[in-house]
Amino acid sequence: MSSSMLTDVNIYHAGVVTANEDIFNGNPSTDILSMANYDEILFVIVKGAGATGTATITVESCDDTSGTTTTAVAYKYQATTSGNTIGSITDAAAAGFTTTAGANQTYVISVRADGLSGTDKFVRLVATESANDPVDGAILSIGCKSKHPKDPPLDMTS
View 1: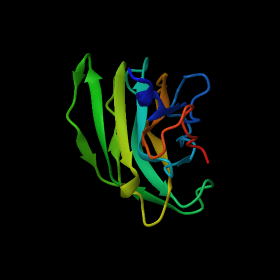
View 2: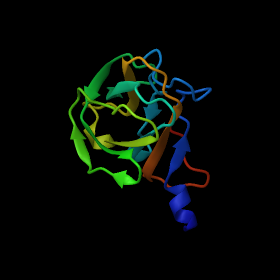
View 3: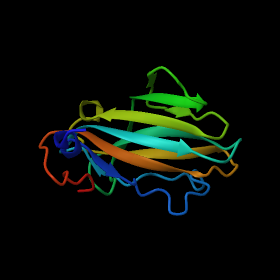
View 4: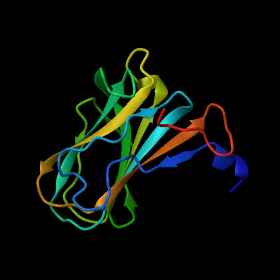
């Protein structure tokens, strides 16, 4: 891995999970992240234990860091729901998609800056619990394709 790759990404905990237990409880939203310095943000949802809990995953374009005005937007995602079998890249409409019941799964959600609404520069992921059964896991965000690579990487939270 070259050092320039490390300056092109910023990995952030997304502000959703503290104990990694029941990650969809309460219909959480990630922190609102700035795309001013990144062309793409990947949200990575990792589901561990919890065989029946599911959530509908949507992405909101935001006009500021407080989410004064939000607009659900379309995005792309890729799911790994069975062992090492990675699914195809799938287009999700603004209404999102519902995760599959089951444990040991990974979902990668890709949001591009040019897919945000109007002049918005901020984004967040929303997980609306659809089958209320605890799911252990985590949600991360990765800022990709830095517009201004630096060491350390530029912040995504302001």
